[in-house]
Length: 404
Image (spheres, rainbow, N blue to C red):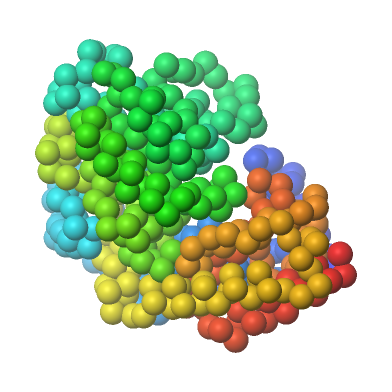
C-alpha cells in the first residue's frame, strides 16, 4: 500500500513528466549493492539492474571513489583537447575487447547510430557500394534504441508508429537466429549485419548455439561487416566478457554501453578493427560529452573491476543455478511457458497474460523486476548478487505464481 508521501511524489511525476514510461508503483530514494529503498524505508532486491547498467551493483565503492577522484581534477573539456584519462580509457577498452580503436559516445542509441555511420562510410569508401545505396541487415524483434533512424527499422509497431517518414530501403529485416536468411538477404549493396547476440528487450531471445558463428562466417565470405550490439549483453552479463565470446568470435564493430558507466554515468562506445574505424575522419562525427574525463575515469575502473573481481564467474555460476531452479519450480509449471537466457540475463515467459500483474505482485514481496514483450519477465540482477539473495527472489517468484 502506497503512503501519502509516495502518492504525492507519483502525482507530481505524472503532472510534470512526459508520459513516456509506465513505472511500477514504487518511489525509490536510496541504493547500495543489490538493494534499494523506497521513501518509506522499505528494502527491495534489485533484479533489473537498470536494464544491465548496474552490473556492478549500486554505488560500487571503487567506482564511487574513481568518480570523486576525477571530479576533483576535471570533468568535461570536449574533444577539442586531449586528456590523459581519455588516453587511458581508449587504450584500456580497446585491449579489453581485443580490438584496435574506440569511438566514445554517451548513450547506447548514440553508439548504434555511430556504428551505422561507420558501416555506411566503410561500404562506400572501402567496399565500393554505390553512393547512397548502402543496406544494413537487421533482425526481426530487434531493439537497438529509440532514435528516429533506429525505430525506423524496428518491427515493434509502437516504436515506429507516428514517428516517420523513414529511410525504409536502408535496412533489411530478417528472422533472428536464421543464418540462411542472412545469406539470402545479402546483395551487392549490403554493408553490414547488425545483431544482438541475445535479444533483451525483444524477450530474452537466445539464438541457436551455432548462429553467431555461422553469421560471422557469412559476413566474412561476402565482405560485409559483422556488427555486434552488446550494450545489454556485454561486460560480464552472460557469464563471459561479451556474449559473442561464448563462440570465440571477433566482430568488425562492437557496440558497448550501459554497464560501461558502472551505473554512475552514461558512456558508450563503438570499438572496432583499425581498417574499419579509420574511415572516420576529423569532422565526420562527434559529441560534446562523448569521452568526457569524468565518465572515462569511471569506465576505466569498471574494466579493472571486471578483470580483478570474480563477477563474470559469478554470473555464469549463479545464472545457471537461477535458471535451473526456475525450470524445476514445483506447482507452477502450468503458468510457465519457458525459461531462457544466459548468465544473469534471464527471461521467464508466462503461459498466461499478465506480465505487469506479476511485476506488481512480486513488488509487494520486495523484489524489483520488469516485464518485456507483455508476458516475459526479465531477471537481470547485479553480478554481485549472492546465492542467498537469489533464493529469496526464487521464494518470492514461487509465492506469486502459486497464488496466481
